[in-house]
Length: 72
Image (cartoon, rainbow, N blue to C red; front, side, top):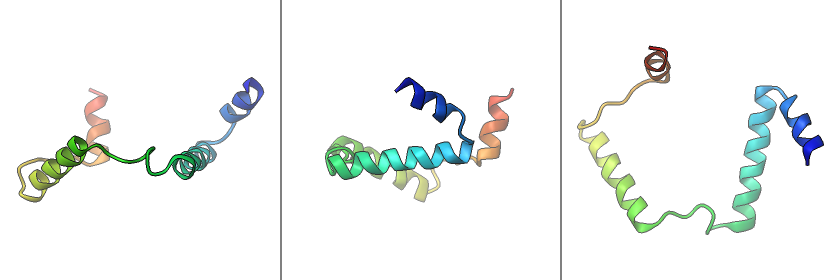
């Protein structure tokens, strides 16, 4: 595993992202739906947040704004 890990570290960012996507897909296919299912409370929270967003009660930020705020 360590040799593979070293090889992974040498991949480009794009290659690492593709690898992570492949790993995620394998987790989902091997364990679906348990690996990706939400609890009822998680579903309720997502619905609550979506409703807040739809009604304009929350503010969203662009990725640029988030990155800029982290640099301060």
